[in-house]
Length: 371
Image (cartoon, rainbow, N blue to C red; front, side, top):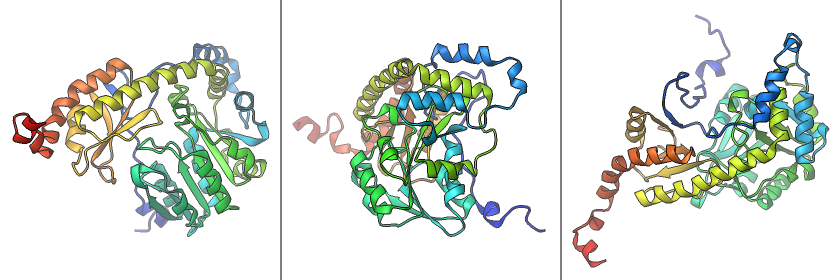
């Protein structure tokens, strides 16, 4: 029987999103990096106001209201902004515009696994460069790939580590005129960002999303900052009306109340610091995170059984069984009470593992008594 789709599509492995429980099911959801706090009240008011007769009309093709709000907030001209149905759609547009069969794309390993799917769709060659010591982004090694498209998820998922702007600046120069995409989905939780590089370099595109810091994962809103030639290229592959009227209105209202977002971000960052400390006390290796999640790892010990045990207790975390981080859990930062419930369920699960790995330090051992 003749295959219905291209050979590349037939043989590829699809992207697997984090589990989304059915509406109304009571779980503690710490697996998809959603913000535990609600969006600005301005968003609800704006959506209700816009949910009228105008819905019979197509939305503005360039999402003008949303793009205008982004231009005002970030101090960048409208000509340097394109809006997307989440930053995932913008990534798909970049892959479509930049890569054909056999072209090379380079990014770190591990990183956001959607990149693998988008590369497979385009039949591109992937140069996946392992992270450096302490999960540092491998910027020099990426530069050496001379790829047509280079992507840096920054902060990186699933480990939360970040590349400094100076290093990204050097990378952009080294690979020019090829395109560098800096995927800043989590950057509002970080101490630095690389937005200024989109103004400085003609080959840099910086992606942002409202799914994380602005608490609008359900609205699917993102934008790309780049110089006009890049934006014009992306417009050629953009769907005609890629954002709904409600999404455009919601996004503009959220950006107009950035102070609300920043308050929520500070709450998440405080809980993140406490979470890192508690997980390390349990015996996990936890790299310092600049995102709204942490990576909790016990090197060499697969975490599938623990992830499943937590799920049975109504707590969802992310586990990547076929990744180099099969021995880790990625844990989104929830409200303090949610994190307390996680710790209560997780500690008895991990305690025997830690004790078995450090027999000499068990209470009552000769070494422990000498300390």
